[in-house]
Image 1 (spheres, rainbow, N blue to C red):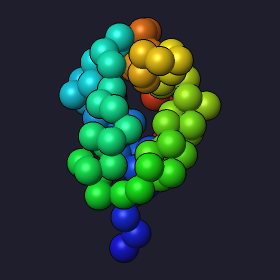
Image 2 (image 1 turned 30 degrees about the horizontal axis):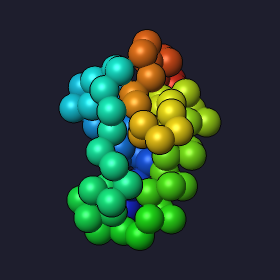
Image 3 (image 1 turned 45 degrees about the horizontal axis):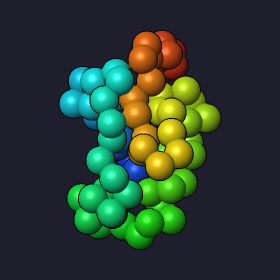
Image 4 (image 1 turned 60 degrees about the horizontal axis):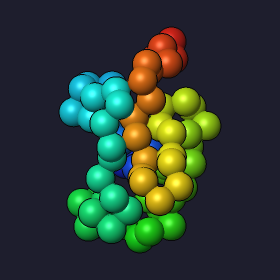
Length: 75
């Protein structure tokens, strides 16, 4: 069984409402400790989430959940 990617875990938290639209995501350092991964992994996860339209990053302010959220992909 494979582990879900960090991007998938964060996306699940966004879609479930744990990180509601418009809220600031935890900082990179917090996420590295929370997910027990390196900063590069967190950056890659945020890049993926930005590409999916789930996150916007504002320089010197942080990353925020998009408001409104794009629709979830169909399975």
